[in-house]
Amino acid sequence: MKIVIDGIMYTAQAVGGISRIFSEILPKICDKNKSIKIHLFTEGDIIQDVPYHSQIIHTKLPDFNNYLRPRRLFAPLTEILQGLLRTYVSGNGENSIWHSTYYSLPVRWKGKTVITVADMIFERFPEFFKGDETKDFIELKKQCIKNSDAVICISGTTQNDVIKYCGADKSKCYVIPLACSSIFTKLDKIIVPDMFKQVGSFILYIGARVAYKNYKILIKAYSKWHGRGEVALVLIGSPLTTEEKRLLSKLNILERVYCFSNINDQELNVLYNKAEVFVYPSLYEGFGIPLLEAMACGCPVIASEIPSTVEIAGACPIYFSKSDIDSLIHAFETALSEGRNSKRVQDGLKHIQLYSWDKTARETLKVYQDLIKYS
Image (cartoon, rainbow, N blue to C red; front, side, top):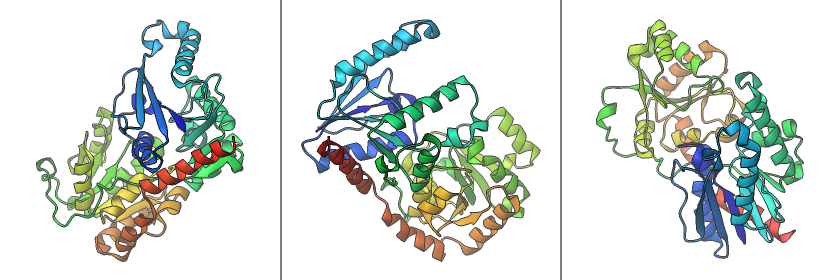
């Protein structure tokens, strides 16, 4: 069986959930079926490591966008050339499957096609994403989903949204949950790196600080919380912007907020183990890998009560109303009073056993096998 993977996310995303999915499952799929050959191609410069396995062939293709300028003028020709090159490398698709990492369909393809859908954030919150490029992407995504033979959704929440916003046929949608790396685990002995020692006790937030992540309700609640003098707020993500520093200063919490960038998984594991609580305040998520990471480390979790988080984490987090500052402040108090040995935390350590990348790989392989079987 030949699987062709377009490695779009390895050239577009330095870190993140989508590329991690493929990096985790592709080698495991190969281990489960020795007859599979995976042809992964990337176009242009890769900005993170691609998965390695003796059954994975990685081909680097030129990106014609870098050679034909101006881009707007040559865009139609560029797409044709890029499509022809992809076809040359991947073949015509007979007895093969094309699996897109980020919404692409092959040209003149005789095989089957699979799309993995992580979320429907653009469709759910159009007010956060404006412009012609966004509209074009939403339309492209819709067409890819409609024209694929199988649509892998990372949660039931995502599946429901795919059906609602794209009119997808439920019979070709597969819910295959994600997992977290085995790196994330509860430590018997916590050795805190020097750069974190200045912080003391802290609340942990990880990820982008954009509108749908609901980051501002976190800092507003933190600024009103009487416990901020004893417990700092740690942000993991891009460095603070001038505008963000201005806002934190206005809220009188700039000196209590620490921001760390370029943190690796080992360091993040320490932070999960050290934090008083991990906060996940999003308005919407397709899945929520950080929830599993935190629970695997025995870290209490505060989360907004949204469908995907309830689906994935169950009753383990302390939930708050996503737009209610007082509700979040109360959650801070509850988390600190319960501590890291609470029943919620113990339940979380058991709950994460429901998820594994091995299971994700096995269920993805079954989708491939079913498509080839009935082709």
